[in-house]
Length: 285
Image (cartoon, rainbow, N blue to C red; front, side, top):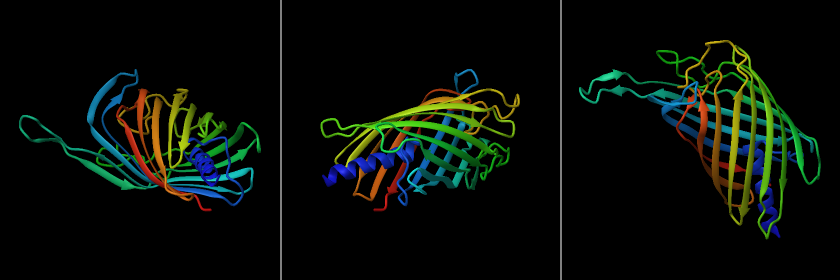
Protein backbone atom coordinates (compact mmCIF):
# COMPACT_ATOMS: atom_id res chain seq x y z
CA UNK A 1 0.00 0.00 0.00
CA UNK A 2 2.83 2.42 0.84
CA UNK A 3 4.40 1.78 -2.58
CA UNK A 4 1.08 2.51 -4.29
CA UNK A 5 0.70 5.79 -2.40
CA UNK A 6 4.25 6.84 -3.26
CA UNK A 7 3.72 5.97 -6.93
CA UNK A 8 0.52 8.01 -7.22
CA UNK A 9 2.14 10.94 -5.41
CA UNK A 10 5.18 11.00 -7.65
CA UNK A 11 2.97 10.84 -10.75
CA UNK A 12 0.96 13.85 -9.67
CA UNK A 13 4.01 15.83 -8.60
CA UNK A 14 5.77 15.04 -11.86
CA UNK A 15 2.74 16.07 -13.89
CA UNK A 16 2.51 19.38 -12.06
CA UNK A 17 6.18 20.10 -12.70
CA UNK A 18 6.43 19.35 -16.40
CA UNK A 19 3.00 19.76 -17.96
CA UNK A 20 1.33 22.36 -15.77
CA UNK A 21 -1.29 19.77 -14.96
CA UNK A 22 -4.86 19.98 -13.77
CA UNK A 23 -3.67 19.28 -10.22
CA UNK A 24 -2.64 21.81 -7.59
CA UNK A 25 -0.40 21.24 -4.58
CA UNK A 26 -2.03 20.67 -1.17
CA UNK A 27 -1.65 23.56 1.27
CA UNK A 28 1.87 23.73 2.66
CA UNK A 29 3.22 21.08 0.29
CA UNK A 30 5.76 21.69 -2.45
CA UNK A 31 7.81 20.29 -5.30
CA UNK A 32 11.33 21.44 -6.29
CA UNK A 33 13.55 20.60 -9.25
CA UNK A 34 17.06 21.50 -10.42
CA UNK A 35 17.73 20.75 -14.08
CA UNK A 36 20.11 21.30 -16.97
CA UNK A 37 18.68 21.89 -20.48
CA UNK A 38 20.63 22.35 -23.71
CA UNK A 39 20.54 22.40 -27.49
CA UNK A 40 23.37 22.34 -30.04
CA UNK A 41 22.00 23.40 -33.43
CA UNK A 42 23.45 23.40 -36.92
CA UNK A 43 20.08 23.71 -38.70
CA UNK A 44 16.85 25.68 -38.33
CA UNK A 45 13.34 25.86 -39.71
CA UNK A 46 12.75 28.80 -42.05
CA UNK A 47 9.61 30.95 -42.17
CA UNK A 48 8.15 28.47 -44.70
CA UNK A 49 8.91 25.38 -42.63
CA UNK A 50 11.91 24.21 -44.63
CA UNK A 51 15.13 23.14 -42.91
CA UNK A 52 18.26 25.19 -43.66
CA UNK A 53 21.79 24.78 -42.28
CA UNK A 54 23.41 27.42 -40.09
CA UNK A 55 26.65 27.97 -38.26
CA UNK A 56 26.58 25.80 -35.16
CA UNK A 57 25.05 27.51 -32.14
CA UNK A 58 24.30 26.27 -28.64
CA UNK A 59 22.28 27.34 -25.65
CA UNK A 60 22.50 25.96 -22.11
CA UNK A 61 20.20 26.73 -19.19
CA UNK A 62 20.59 25.67 -15.57
CA UNK A 63 17.23 26.24 -13.91
CA UNK A 64 15.20 25.87 -10.74
CA UNK A 65 11.50 25.03 -10.67
CA UNK A 66 9.39 25.27 -7.52
CA UNK A 67 5.73 24.73 -6.67
CA UNK A 68 4.14 25.53 -3.32
CA UNK A 69 0.57 25.11 -2.14
CA UNK A 70 -0.51 28.48 -0.73
CA UNK A 71 -3.96 27.00 -0.07
CA UNK A 72 -5.63 23.76 -1.14
CA UNK A 73 -6.84 25.61 -4.23
CA UNK A 74 -3.98 28.02 -5.00
CA UNK A 75 -0.46 26.99 -5.99
CA UNK A 76 2.42 29.36 -6.63
CA UNK A 77 4.98 28.35 -9.28
CA UNK A 78 8.43 29.76 -10.05
CA UNK A 79 10.60 28.80 -13.01
CA UNK A 80 13.97 30.53 -13.37
CA UNK A 81 16.98 29.67 -15.53
CA UNK A 82 19.44 31.29 -13.14
CA UNK A 83 22.39 30.59 -15.44
CA UNK A 84 22.38 30.64 -19.21
CA UNK A 85 25.11 30.35 -21.80
CA UNK A 86 24.56 31.21 -25.45
CA UNK A 87 27.34 30.66 -27.95
CA UNK A 88 28.21 30.37 -31.60
CA UNK A 89 31.07 28.11 -32.63
CA UNK A 90 33.82 29.37 -34.90
CA UNK A 91 33.61 28.35 -38.54
CA UNK A 92 36.80 27.04 -40.08
CA UNK A 93 37.48 26.57 -43.79
CA UNK A 94 37.70 22.90 -44.71
CA UNK A 95 40.27 23.62 -47.40
CA UNK A 96 42.56 26.28 -45.94
CA UNK A 97 41.98 25.74 -42.21
CA UNK A 98 41.48 29.47 -41.75
CA UNK A 99 38.85 30.80 -39.36
CA UNK A 100 35.98 32.15 -41.43
CA UNK A 101 33.84 33.34 -38.54
CA UNK A 102 35.21 33.57 -34.99
CA UNK A 103 33.33 32.03 -32.10
CA UNK A 104 31.48 34.07 -29.52
CA UNK A 105 29.64 33.47 -26.24
CA UNK A 106 27.75 35.20 -23.47
CA UNK A 107 26.83 34.10 -19.95
CA UNK A 108 23.96 35.44 -17.90
CA UNK A 109 20.60 34.79 -16.28
CA UNK A 110 17.46 33.82 -18.18
CA UNK A 111 13.88 35.07 -18.15
CA UNK A 112 11.80 34.23 -15.06
CA UNK A 113 8.23 32.86 -15.07
CA UNK A 114 5.93 33.38 -12.08
CA UNK A 115 2.62 31.53 -12.13
CA UNK A 116 -0.47 31.41 -9.96
CA UNK A 117 -2.57 28.27 -10.50
CA UNK A 118 -6.10 27.88 -9.18
CA UNK A 119 -7.81 24.51 -8.80
CA UNK A 120 -11.28 24.72 -10.36
CA UNK A 121 -12.22 21.27 -9.04
CA UNK A 122 -11.39 19.50 -5.79
CA UNK A 123 -11.37 15.73 -5.26
CA UNK A 124 -13.01 15.27 -8.66
CA UNK A 125 -12.37 12.52 -11.21
CA UNK A 126 -11.09 15.13 -13.67
CA UNK A 127 -8.81 17.78 -12.20
CA UNK A 128 -9.30 21.21 -13.75
CA UNK A 129 -7.14 24.25 -13.11
CA UNK A 130 -6.63 27.77 -14.46
CA UNK A 131 -3.27 29.54 -14.45
CA UNK A 132 -1.90 33.03 -14.96
CA UNK A 133 1.77 33.17 -15.93
CA UNK A 134 3.87 36.33 -15.94
CA UNK A 135 7.14 36.18 -17.87
CA UNK A 136 9.75 38.68 -16.70
CA UNK A 137 12.49 39.65 -19.21
CA UNK A 138 15.55 39.27 -16.98
CA UNK A 139 17.76 37.67 -19.63
CA UNK A 140 20.02 39.20 -22.26
CA UNK A 141 18.07 39.82 -25.48
CA UNK A 142 20.94 41.11 -27.64
CA UNK A 143 24.47 40.04 -26.76
CA UNK A 144 27.76 39.15 -28.39
CA UNK A 145 29.63 40.93 -31.14
CA UNK A 146 26.70 40.91 -33.58
CA UNK A 147 23.87 41.10 -31.04
CA UNK A 148 22.44 37.66 -31.92
CA UNK A 149 23.35 35.83 -28.71
CA UNK A 150 20.48 35.68 -26.22
CA UNK A 151 19.46 34.26 -22.86
CA UNK A 152 16.02 35.91 -23.01
CA UNK A 153 13.57 37.55 -25.40
CA UNK A 154 13.38 41.04 -23.88
CA UNK A 155 9.57 41.15 -23.57
CA UNK A 156 7.10 40.92 -20.68
CA UNK A 157 4.41 38.35 -21.49
CA UNK A 158 1.23 37.25 -19.76
CA UNK A 159 -0.28 33.82 -20.42
CA UNK A 160 -3.58 32.32 -19.29
CA UNK A 161 -3.91 28.54 -19.38
CA UNK A 162 -6.55 25.90 -18.71
CA UNK A 163 -5.57 22.32 -17.79
CA UNK A 164 -7.54 19.11 -17.45
CA UNK A 165 -6.00 15.94 -16.03
CA UNK A 166 -7.05 12.49 -14.88
CA UNK A 167 -5.28 9.40 -13.48
CA UNK A 168 -6.38 5.76 -13.42
CA UNK A 169 -5.66 2.38 -11.85
CA UNK A 170 -5.10 -0.19 -14.61
CA UNK A 171 -3.94 -3.61 -13.34
CA UNK A 172 -1.72 -2.04 -10.70
CA UNK A 173 -0.31 0.59 -13.05
CA UNK A 174 -1.26 4.23 -12.70
CA UNK A 175 -1.37 5.99 -16.08
CA UNK A 176 -2.40 9.63 -16.31
CA UNK A 177 -3.40 12.04 -19.05
CA UNK A 178 -3.38 15.81 -19.16
CA UNK A 179 -4.31 18.37 -21.79
CA UNK A 180 -4.05 22.14 -21.86
CA UNK A 181 -4.81 25.21 -23.97
CA UNK A 182 -3.28 28.66 -23.46
CA UNK A 183 -3.16 32.18 -24.87
CA UNK A 184 0.13 34.06 -24.56
CA UNK A 185 -0.04 37.86 -24.77
CA UNK A 186 3.36 39.24 -25.78
CA UNK A 187 4.77 42.78 -25.82
CA UNK A 188 7.60 44.79 -27.44
CA UNK A 189 6.53 43.97 -30.98
CA UNK A 190 6.25 40.19 -30.55
CA UNK A 191 3.22 38.38 -31.91
CA UNK A 192 0.75 36.77 -29.52
CA UNK A 193 0.55 32.96 -29.42
CA UNK A 194 -1.96 30.17 -29.04
CA UNK A 195 -0.58 27.08 -27.32
CA UNK A 196 -1.90 23.60 -26.69
CA UNK A 197 -0.46 20.34 -25.52
CA UNK A 198 -1.06 16.92 -24.04
CA UNK A 199 0.81 14.42 -21.89
CA UNK A 200 0.40 10.74 -21.16
CA UNK A 201 2.47 8.74 -18.72
CA UNK A 202 2.61 5.94 -16.21
CA UNK A 203 4.70 4.72 -13.30
CA UNK A 204 5.69 1.22 -12.23
CA UNK A 205 7.57 0.61 -8.98
CA UNK A 206 10.58 2.95 -9.09
CA UNK A 207 10.34 3.92 -12.80
CA UNK A 208 8.14 6.36 -14.68
CA UNK A 209 7.83 7.34 -18.33
CA UNK A 210 5.79 9.87 -20.25
CA UNK A 211 5.43 11.57 -23.61
CA UNK A 212 4.51 15.22 -24.04
CA UNK A 213 3.22 16.98 -27.15
CA UNK A 214 3.52 20.76 -27.23
CA UNK A 215 2.34 23.12 -29.96
CA UNK A 216 2.92 26.85 -30.37
CA UNK A 217 1.10 28.81 -33.09
CA UNK A 218 1.85 32.48 -33.75
CA UNK A 219 -1.07 34.84 -34.39
CA UNK A 220 1.31 36.96 -36.51
CA UNK A 221 -0.05 40.20 -35.12
CA UNK A 222 3.26 41.73 -34.05
CA UNK A 223 5.61 44.15 -35.80
CA UNK A 224 6.56 43.12 -39.33
CA UNK A 225 10.17 42.16 -40.12
CA UNK A 226 11.01 42.10 -36.42
CA UNK A 227 13.37 39.45 -35.01
CA UNK A 228 12.53 37.03 -37.81
CA UNK A 229 15.71 34.93 -37.86
CA UNK A 230 15.30 31.21 -37.28
CA UNK A 231 18.71 30.81 -35.65
CA UNK A 232 17.40 31.67 -32.20
CA UNK A 233 15.21 30.32 -29.42
CA UNK A 234 13.52 33.71 -29.17
CA UNK A 235 12.51 34.67 -32.71
CA UNK A 236 9.23 36.46 -33.37
CA UNK A 237 6.49 34.37 -35.02
CA UNK A 238 8.22 31.10 -34.18
CA UNK A 239 6.00 28.01 -34.35
CA UNK A 240 6.61 24.35 -33.58
CA UNK A 241 5.14 20.99 -32.73
CA UNK A 242 7.42 19.23 -30.25
CA UNK A 243 7.34 15.65 -29.00
CA UNK A 244 9.30 14.96 -25.81
CA UNK A 245 9.62 11.48 -24.28
CA UNK A 246 10.91 11.35 -20.73
CA UNK A 247 12.04 8.69 -18.27
CA UNK A 248 12.79 8.93 -14.59
CA UNK A 249 13.84 6.96 -11.54
CA UNK A 250 12.01 7.37 -8.24
CA UNK A 251 14.76 7.01 -5.64
CA UNK A 252 12.43 7.21 -2.63
CA UNK A 253 9.31 9.08 -1.56
CA UNK A 254 11.21 12.40 -1.57
CA UNK A 255 13.83 12.23 -4.36
CA UNK A 256 14.00 11.32 -8.02
CA UNK A 257 15.96 11.93 -11.22
CA UNK A 258 14.80 12.44 -14.81
CA UNK A 259 16.02 12.83 -18.38
CA UNK A 260 14.23 13.76 -21.59
CA UNK A 261 14.82 14.21 -25.30
CA UNK A 262 12.81 16.72 -27.33
CA UNK A 263 12.29 16.84 -31.09
CA UNK A 264 10.55 19.42 -33.27
CA UNK A 265 8.38 17.51 -35.74
CA UNK A 266 7.43 20.76 -37.41
CA UNK A 267 8.66 24.32 -37.04
CA UNK A 268 9.01 27.85 -38.32
CA UNK A 269 11.79 30.20 -37.26
CA UNK A 270 13.15 27.80 -34.66
CA UNK A 271 16.13 25.47 -34.36
CA UNK A 272 15.60 22.07 -35.97
CA UNK A 273 17.90 20.04 -33.70
CA UNK A 274 16.85 18.03 -30.62
CA UNK A 275 16.94 19.29 -27.06
CA UNK A 276 18.15 17.45 -23.97
CA UNK A 277 17.43 17.82 -20.28
CA UNK A 278 18.48 16.08 -17.07
CA UNK A 279 17.46 16.92 -13.54
CA UNK A 280 16.85 15.95 -9.95
CA UNK A 281 13.62 16.65 -8.08
CA UNK A 282 12.68 16.78 -4.42
CA UNK A 283 9.32 16.44 -2.72
CA UNK A 284 9.46 17.04 1.05
CA UNK A 285 7.38 14.71 3.17
